[in-house]
Image 1 (tube, rainbow, N blue to C red):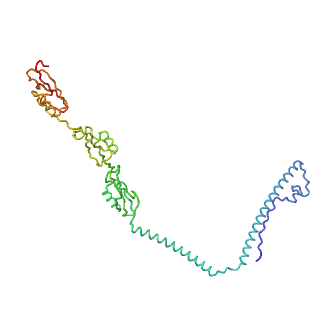
Image 2 (cartoon, helix red, strand yellow; image 1 turned 135 degrees about the horizontal axis):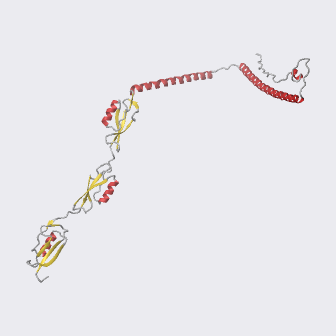
Length: 347
C-alpha cells in the first residue's frame, strides 16, 4: 500500500512589496514621464510609514506561517498514527477462541437472556398483582367524617360508604360528650378500598375523679382536701350529734368514693355537738331547799343560785320564789334562782 502524504498548507503571501513598486519608490509612473520631485520631509515620513507597514506585515506573515506549520505537523502525526494502527492490525494474526472462550461467550449470552426474562416476568407479575388486588379488595371509596357522632349513626354512615366500623378504644375527653366518637382512622377524606374497617375511639366524657372522704375533719380542712381532688365545698348544714364534737364534719353528699366531674360541689353536714335538752320549769314554791336542789341535779341544771329573803305569809325555810317561773323553758345552761323565805327579823 502506497504511503499517504499529508496535505501541505501554504499561507498566502500577504504584505510582500511589489518589486516594480520598490524600484519606482513605491509610485507607478509611465515610461518617459519625468520623475516627480517630493518634499524631503514628506518623503522621509512616507518612508517611515512604509517601513512600519512592512514590519507589521512581516510579523503577521510569520505568525500565520507558524500556525499553519503547527497544524500541518499535528495532522501529519495523526496520519502516521492511523497508518501505524492499520499496519499493526493487518500484521496481527487472527485470534483463535478455545473451549474456555466459547464457554465464556455462551455464559454471557445465557446471562443476558436470564436477566431480560426476569425483568419481563417481574413486570408481568406486578401488573397481575395489582389487577388481582383491585379485583379482591374492591373499588376505592372516600372515608366519611364520623367524629362527634354516636356509634349507631357512624355505623349507618360507614355502611352507606361501603366501609365497616371497628371500636378501637375509649377514653375521657372534655370536648366530646360520653358516647360520641372522638377519633377515627383512616382520617376523613382518605381514599381506601371498600369494606375497609374504620377504627374509632369513643369518648367517655369529662374525667370523673373520685370524691374523697372528708368526714371527721374541720370544715376548713375538708374544703382544702376537696379542692386538692378537683372539687369544691358546697352548702353547709348543721345538726346535733351526741357522739361528735361541735364543728366536725359528720357527713357529705355525694358520699365518699363517688365519681363526679371536676369542679363539682360536695355538700357538708357539720355537727353542733350533743343535743341540748329542754324542760318545762317545775313549780318549786313551798318545797324545801334540799328537795329543790335534788330536782335541779336530776335535770342537770348547771347553775343554781340560792337567795334568802323575808316573805310575808310564806313558811320559813321553804322556797318562796323562783326564776324562771313555773312552765317556762329550761335548758341545762339556763341559770336558776331560788329564793328561800325567812322569818321577819332574821334577815
